[in-house]
Length: 337
Ligand code: EPU
Image (cartoon, rainbow, N blue to C red; front, side, top):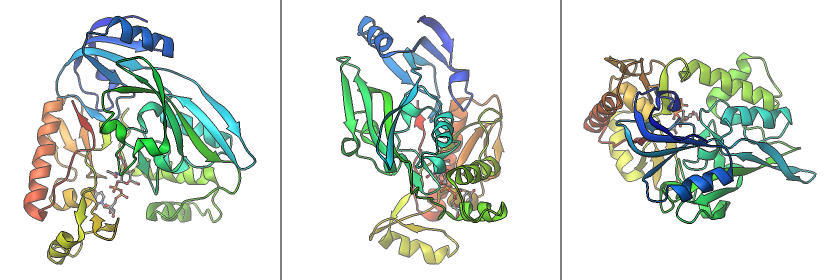
């Protein structure tokens, strides 16, 4: 465990933004984490996982603690289910592949999402018809102030669309150290209802898909639409899909009959922000080294030398233009630091 001063975070954020941490330390165990928190009690701290959901717009004037706890194991099983635990620092996609090697079902639709396991509950990650909350059992977290461990069970996490207690009341108070998922061993629920998956499986001539087939289809779809952060800096969806009151939507829709929407409750619909941004003319546009991806307008990209401020400015421009055109406000999904 080595404390590094004036440390570049370029390789620790998937946007590939150059920003510096005043101090940086990577921790590899609960004991190390406790020690760092105890020894640096008075310092301002910033917790860093895989850096896949943040936009750095400035240097971080704090001690950055990189949670690098590794390990995954089967905790218990019944005839039908298995409880698997992953430490927070495991790469999410590698963990998903590990569950699929064991033929455990539940995470396959979330293949290839960038980031580490420990941050998945924070924003209740999701893709292609599933969210973490569907298989999440519990997570362990250390309270920063007391260094005591606490277990958060499902109901305590208050999961919502890209939401949880860790973005609300518990924000900046806990460090998630491990997560337990309850997965199926038999009678897997194969979720192919998401349009793109049906099309991709048909394309591959798969009629009776296995978990691995679904995962492979998701991987193919993501590779075709979403840029690989290793090749082009990005943070996945930059914005959330806005949830609009049906009463408001009914006034907007006649003016834009092509507007896509999904019912989310009796009173609300979700509108794809990617559609709004594309219609507002931003898809594929480039402003210096900051841009909007050519295949998915929800994703902002760094062509190499963009600063966080430049990407933020583009995001504000998009938000304002979308609001002026449609009267719908879109909110950032990534954490702007
Ligand atoms: N669309 C456009 N233009 C675009 C992008 C999308 O018109 O440039 C339209 C599509 O035609 C489609 C609709 O918007 O009708 C939805 O598009 P898509 O299926 O690609 O999904 P999304 O709503 O854009 C969400 C998640 C993604 C996740 C996909 C698949 C959010 C904010 N994003 O995107 O999550 O992979 O669904 O489930 O909910 C992420 O969070 O980082 C992420 C990539």
